[in-house]
Image 1 (cartoon, rainbow, N blue to C red):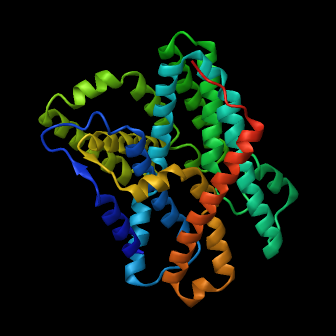
Image 2: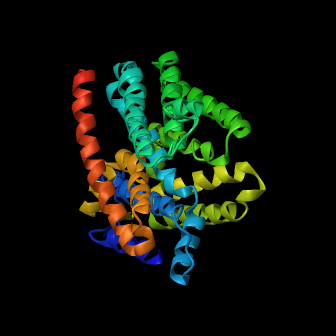
Image 3: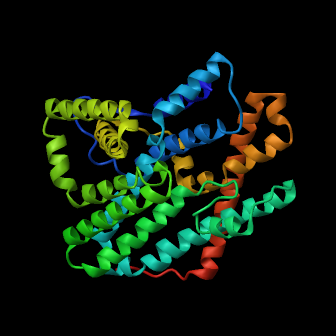
Amino acid sequence: MIIAYAALFVLALIGAKISIKSFNTKEYLSMDSTNAVRGIFIMLVFLSHLMQYYTYTETIDVWGGKISKILGQMIVVMFMFYSGYGIGESVKRKGSAYIKSFPTNRVLKTWLHFAAGVFVFFVLNLIIGKEYPVDRTLLSFIGWENIGNSNWYIFAVIALYIITWIAFTLFKNNKIAAAAVVTALTAAYVVVMYFVKEYWWYDTVLCYVAGLWYSLFKDKIESLLTKNNVIWAVIVVVLALGWWHTHRRQNLFVGLRILEALMFALLFVAASLKVSVKNKALIWMGKYTFEIYILMRVPMIVFGKLGVKSFNLYIYVIASLVATFVISFLFSKLLTQVDKLLFRPKKIK
């Protein structure tokens, strides 16, 4: 699978822009730029999940497995950071009216979209004869369990949305205080999940908080990062060394996993000031990140059952990828129509 990682790297380079003397302050956190980055990372998630459906033995595949192992949870870090940053920016622009819309437009809508995806797996399991206990099936619809689908990330995001809504409702006129409450409640979430779930349920959620704080102090942070190339380079090197140090020792203490994720997120954001990804294909993928994440396992399961995996691994990979794009696009269009029926759009001043 090293070929797939190499192809993704080349794709990211196509259309990329490097700012040597200046800094890309206007675009590094724009919608297109963040969607392109999401496109890169959702493909890394795809490759990571793909390796759960076959045993690689060839040297070329083993190297791909090593890359996947090194990246680990880092493949979801930027989703968390951008989500928190986006919330912070929306709160600054739209104020309390945006927070009032959270229960419907963020929590309920996200859950309904997720539940629709879980229903796809429920139907698929009926077709292929895969049985799960009733309690596990029911709990899968809130993300606490799974029936073949990915779940922990959506559960965490919905929990973070609820936390954000509570904090900004309590301190609607004080964004700093609200962000502090989000931080405290998210830390409490980490502690609780530490005792009841595996580490990947909680080790990246503070990146959401980091994104929120970054939004609130964006001007000051950018002022420091872009003061000159020397200061930027020093910060990048420190973050890079910090990430690698925590990565190598992550198994010693769960706090190191959390620090690793935070270091990676900040390192990537700092690097984005110099290197921006502009590939249109990746931007398109980034727009359908949610749908791709929810449904990518469906083609992997189906083509595995049809024997494509046994016939030829590379055909299996390509077929799974193309099918994922197609059903994700169609699923998105369906959800858009459902949203129009269930949620009346409201203008937020």
